[in-house]
Length: 515
Ligand SMILES: OC[C@H]1O[C@](O)(CO)[C@@H](O)[C@@H]1O
Image (cartoon, rainbow, N blue to C red; front, side, top):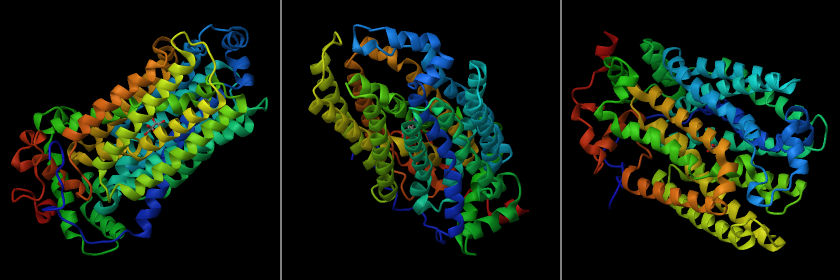
């Protein structure tokens, strides 16, 4: 088979141990870090469409929206000031992720989650009681820092705690929490939109998931990998026994030792990840989040209410449609949890990609038919319902492929010595392109019209081909043995030297480490 179709079942180890209640609870609490991110994604689109919020903080935008009748429906909502409110958070998260990478490595995953939770809580409170734009913006920046820290630490935490045969499912808990956050935010917007103080409730309630992750992370244990990396061998071994529910952890622990030793041999993560032998990791950690955002998903997540209004739905129906896409998002992410360690990552990526392309092309055709390139016309009730169904079809495809795998794959492919750096690149690139799409989508819609959906469809074609040729299958491969997979890949194999493979004769033994 062409491309990355390496099947890892032969030659990779399966370790002893089961999924303990302890590891499950730790992962559920940690995944709540995704709630704060999701809540924020889902809340801002609804809040910025509330009259009470607009008239208080953005009176000029409010007046323009009430008075102005732009001749083209594609350009009705094009306002940079307003989109900056939504997107500024992701800019803060982008810068925070660089600091978070350092904290996560030096102080551990747990401290990083705790810090993220506290800062996010401060931001939520500030937003809920805001009396002027300055408070709103400072609050947004704090939320962004919190999201940067949580997105950095939680996926790593989940991948390291999970036994390899369940790593995919447990890691997807993070994306699951994101989608639940988006859905809950949609419901809260729907409930409070008509109240004068609705926006305060919507923004202030972000404190609830913030408290969950803050309190939760006080009680979470750190991962064996991270404890070991900070020099505490015995404690790390005890933690591994505890989370695997068996005393027979020698083989897995040996892998951790090897990985830690390899990590200690490198001078700095950032110069290390730039070396040729880490080219596949660097490429994946950059391209996967970039591609994830260029599926166009946040056009739907941020602006679904606006989009559906544009298609002729009423105010309530538009907010309700956002709830419907939110439900589909949660449900399909759950399917991914069930499928990812059985079907594998590649199958989900490839199927999801094809399904997204078909839906995007059909949506473009229907919008073109109704509004042409001038942006005038109406869409019949039946047709707008069909567009809603197609969008649900698209969201489902994203939610079992690029959504969860966008976090899982970069977090599981990197050896320990570059894991924090790889994850920081992943988060930073994700945040950068979330910011760009959030900030420029409405302007792009105004200029590219229905072609915008074709633009994203073309990107999905590119990324689906990329997966086919360049992403090897990683299901069931123990995390510290991933270099075996890269070495056997038709293209990336050339970059991986023999001694980079954990478990080879040259690797360090436990007793050396303990000496
Ligand atoms: O569920 C959709 C959400 O998932 C993400 O892609 C993160 O993985 C967000 O950017 C998006 O809003």
